[in-house]
Image 1 (tube, one colour):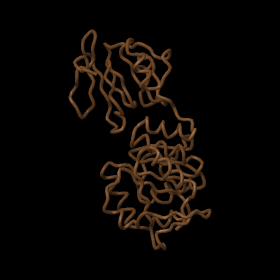
Image 2: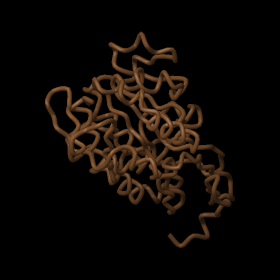
Image 3: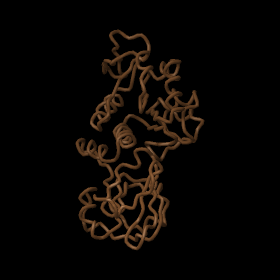
Image 4: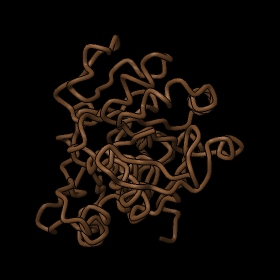
Length: 282
């Protein structure tokens, strides 16, 4: 079984940099769990896939390569991917794997991408303008050159924006910085249409603290209205009157901010009751 050399190396490296524990499993009969790459890379897997099937993973990734067809034909791998999807956990595939492995078994979301050479095999809506596509807990990417963005996106989805930013900084890879934006610019725009991770600052006096938390120049901060209501769908850190609600997007739980009083707001995720942040000590 041959794998795509670059994708495998980048995925393993970046996911570990992003604070994730990585287990490489081998499919099929291999000598000492050695997997060969398309271009001569030799990867020693930690264990055969049979030993991985008893573990719960937050994410299962299938890289591309000539061996993708072996993964497609492995009943155990497909069962693991189906269980993963049914449990609401993440699956991902890159290069040829979305078309070769996920597509035949109905594992793709409504929108997906893959290597351009394998586009004809896709029956789902093929996305060519986005090199990495996230849809229904399924992440897909195009050819090996997209591996860094693919891996950093997985870090962000599982571990939050800050670990992804840290890993990107170590690799000198351009990654959107957390920024502070005007509240009235947000309420007129669908939150999901915002590409840049956003910190919402609800008090002018908190601008220096908020900017230091999200590494944004202080002059970019703006005071915002505290009387309005908004449901925030994409953000990684929210500063609400001195309270940092961290990585709400990690669990993909929208954060609701609601009117409190003249000088306060209520903030909660779907997993907790609203809290009047004026009563918080920090």
